Length: 185
Image 1 (cartoon, helix red, strand yellow):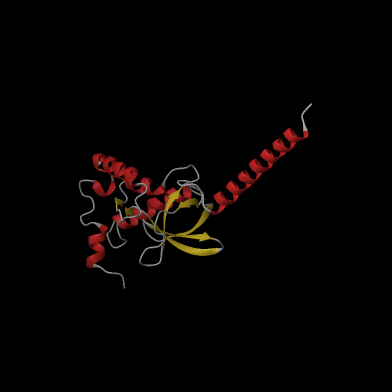
Image 2 (cartoon, helix red, strand yellow):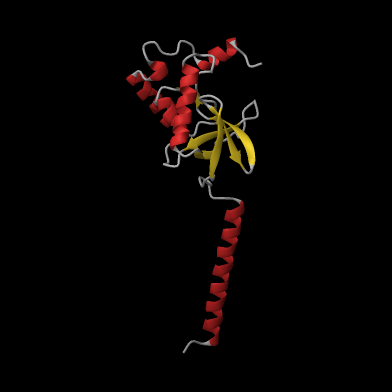
């Protein structure tokens, strides 16, 4: 038969364990463990502006998002800009106009657009699909480089396959060079 002293010490140990567990839970809620990423919910796509800029409905308001890590031809770079926009629309239509957004280090660009990676409902990264298909180029802008390896591999595949902008009669001028000569108004 356990003595009162042993029962008290057992109760004390259980209480300490419970308090430590509760403290760990509360601290982890406020300061998540390193590397833990909260998944964003799926959002509805409202409009595709071009091959790398989309508007979505997020928290009951419209948000313009620039896809991280890619640079699609501008609409004035015919026929490549229109082709990139159409391809992005086809990916999003296949995903039921629903995407999950994932942010990186910086939340917005200099134009105030949210920066994000897009994931289809099938778990495919839209940014990589655009590059692999030859409809966009790799465009790194540190510190937002979480998927630079995957995007680099996709661009190598597209170049080797001579897909889209990498074809024999492909894009003649990089989108960023085109923007320098044709600034936004």
